[in-house]
Image 1 (cartoon, rainbow, N blue to C red):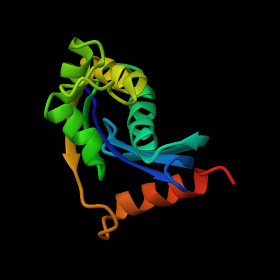
Image 2 (cartoon, rainbow, N blue to C red):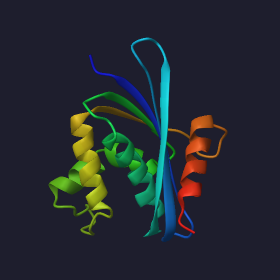
Image 3 (cartoon, one colour):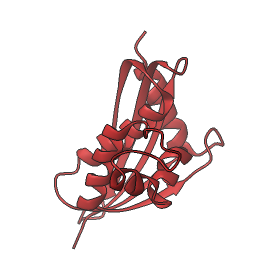
Length: 149
């Protein structure tokens, strides 16, 4: 039986593009019923908000050592819609060219995310940002703290 993991993520950017950070919370209940949680974060000197949102998700999924059943909760419509509406799969099928014939941005991260979604059983849920959702607020704090000064 696959382990069930809940992941919460957020990204932040000081200027867009500019220095950015990402944060994630990974949470699951072990076989004894104990709640286990870890927080991860990181940043880049020159990036965009969307890259930080995607990096939070890919970094969190990359931490999982074997295939899991995962629910990702993020305030990023870009990430949620890119996967749930099939955009990223379509872009990959079309050699990272969008329907408007322009290159898809962040193809490297979309490629990684699609591969991780093939490894794990992943569900994406959009949550409203800055609306008092405790885990989203914590991820936002982790992301902002990780922005390089």
